[in-house]
Image (cartoon, rainbow, N blue to C red):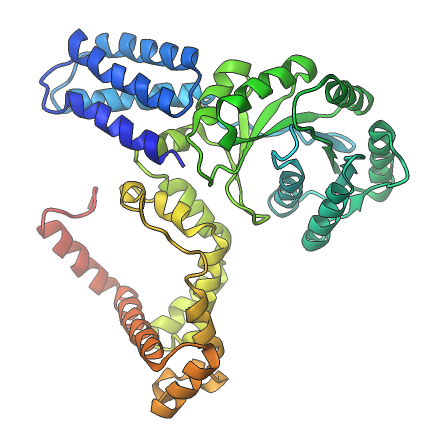
Amino acid sequence: MFENLTDKLERAFKVLKGQGQITEINVAETLKEVRRALLDADVNFKTAKEFTSRVKEKALGENVISSISPGQLMIKICHEELVELMGGNETDINYKGNPGVILMSGLQGSGKTTFSGKLANYLKTKKGKNPLLVACDVYRPAAIDQLHVLGESLGIEVYSNRDEKDPVKIAQAAIQHARSKGFNVVIVDTAGRLAVDEEMMIEIENVKRAINPSETLFVVDSMTGQDAVNTAKAFNDRINFDGVVLTKLDGDTRGGAALSIKEVVNKPIKFVGTGEKMDALDVFYPSRMADRILGKGDIVSLVERAQEQFDEEEARKLQKKIQKNQFDFNDFLNQIQQVKKMGNMKDLMGMIPGMGKAMKNVDIDDNAFKPIEAIIYSMTPEERARPEIINNSRKARIASGSGTNVQEVNKLLKQFGDTKKMMKMMSNPKNMRNMMGQLKGMGGGMPGI
């Protein structure tokens, strides 16, 4: 995500590296490269031109203070303008009402049905709501089946009526059902088409008019670039939606849709989908996205994901086990499961400042933990609790049971031992202070230490 754009922007800012002051000449040269980078990312031409004009106006109006170089100042201004370009602040959805009704719209293949499931899961687990999913795609039976499968996996009820062919009547009946059964949010999944056509527009207009939703969302595949922006404009002109959802942002996307859509349709991006799993849904934060585009990572989102997965009480219990040198393979396995729940590994690494570029050409397989899990699952309960008893014959049995070899078992045991020693050392505040002091003395310590 945004890797090529980030690289090209970094090269653009190098024009100002070593310059003592900002001038009209070096600003023009830098912004020429910035505009080219945006266009290569499939950003709308008018949007790219207006963006660089605003940056130029701000840059030439600034005085470079002694502690900030021209390059740093240009990055700061670009960051501010990128944030504004993508909407300024995050925007929540309106799910209030009796019940609150959220209407989905978009083209076929944009990910509406999957997102409907993700949104229902988000409202249930993070907002404490009791959502009802509604299948209003009367043309594609597979869409109804897909929604039922998603609902079952999430423990969320799905309302459908395969005998009724009028999506308006299905949606209206679903809302009545929600009121009578105590559901406080209704998510209406509608049909998509392969192209914007009059029949589809009339249908979605009729559904919206009939149910008067508290929120209408336009779901778009971010991998379609400028086509996504053009489609969004066509939909907005007809149904005046409230916000945009960008799906498949973890794919091979250049980022043009994320950077252009707010400027073109004047509607905020509210959510982004970053994977196939039902929890792979993020609120869209323009400031954090600007950080990632400029290669600064997104440590806040990384910490939030970690906090969602790691229970405080469990963390306290684990800390006590570490201090008593009782950390075992059961704990190790549990930590792996929690890390996996945080999302795509390459995406997580990209949130660490400076790691995005380093990981650009590195392929991180999300199945990389499987051999480790297989080895641990092949151990007996006693072996997991007391790894020190694992001798050569036990290693051979574990390797055979896990489909690996003794060398891989030995490697895991060594890694586990090293991890256990490191965790034991870090659990001691005195050791941590000494380590921080050493880092500071090396001159390359962490900022603020």
